[in-house]
Image (cartoon, rainbow, N blue to C red; front, side, top):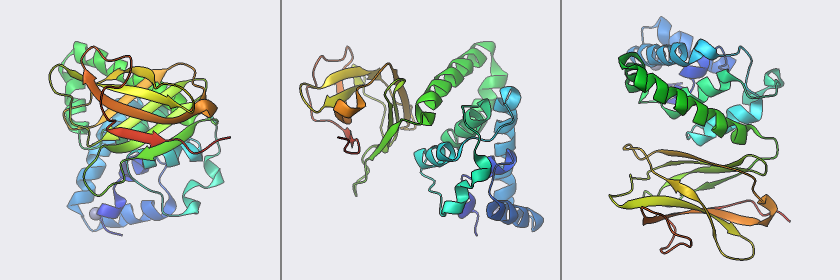
Amino acid sequence: MNCDELQGHYELYVLGLAEEEESREIRQHLDRGCEVCMRELGSARELAAMVGGTAVMAAPPPALRRRILASVGVEARRLGWWAPVWGVAGITALSVAVFVALFFRGREVDLAQQLVDSREQVRNQTIELTRLTEAFAIMNGPDTTEASFGKGPQQPPKGRVFVNPAQGVLLIASNLPPAPNGKTYEMWLLPKRGMPMPAGLFQSQTDGTALYVRRGTVNVNGTNAVAVTLENAAGAPQPTVQPLIVAALPSNS
Ligand SMILES: [Zn+2]
């Protein structure tokens, strides 16, 4: 296994959650002084320390690990990856830590720096963690439906939506450049019958990633898809342009 193939597993390794095969590979890389792996593991450790203060030492349930990894583009290669040993239910702060670690991969140094820099930013990070916890409630719900979007050959916005009937909708996207001045992204629920329903305004990060949570109940069975359009800053009661994102939910009867 080369270092590229180990991407996404360093954080799990640090948290003691990596699978045996990946753990062994990482140890071998370290034993032969692999600089890439030492660096990756260093930042994984830093981040784990940063978010680990509130961590509950329990493993995330298997479906959740799969979803976390899938949401950041790391696919599990084998079924054995989510062995029953992880059968602990419930959201844990540690799950959030793993998610934060993976979602913000590449930005971890900045985040750590911000935390050290000022109280204001610590407060912002706390808000961010709260938002991620909400995101988790949706991602982790046993009755959550998920759908992916953006599989085209160009570089369309891509990512995943998670829709939970009681908790709401979570959208995770990349390749979504920040909306220009005076514009905003607007999310829509496309019902099986009737007009699109506005589901809130959001902005993406400068690196083109977005994580948006729309809280509230959702009639999942009555919903065909989740869509996103670019609208004027105030938002619109109905879409005015073609959607940039359409995530069709798995057909439900
Ligand atoms: Zn390596």
